[in-house]
Image 1: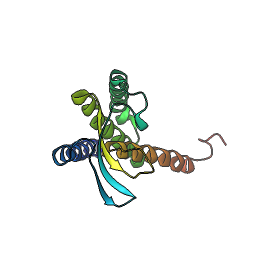
Image 2: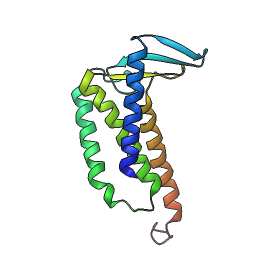
Image 3: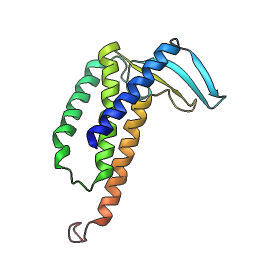
Length: 152
């Protein structure tokens, strides 16, 4: 299931970006829920919030190292840690989606615009959801360990 989550996340991200590129022009904004949510096609040369703009080699290097680490270590994860596995799958799938954009274009295609937050994409959404799953797993798994294992 881990690899299926990665592949589905990656494909949904890439297909959504391809649709935006085909149907919109750069800078175009289409209100879907006026004053709340638009589709806004932008090119992001940085990370979240546009930080570290044009540091493509840094982002590529970090993504490759972290992805390789997760892929190398995922088999060591206990099978019953579903949230952990799904979370890592979402993070890797999202990271690979943004990585492909950086390698192909030198920037990331963003289009989800809620006005109160910088414009983002499905890969970013998957990464954030994956991180939430990891935190949820961390807190829920520590509750199920016997007191002896937790050092109490």
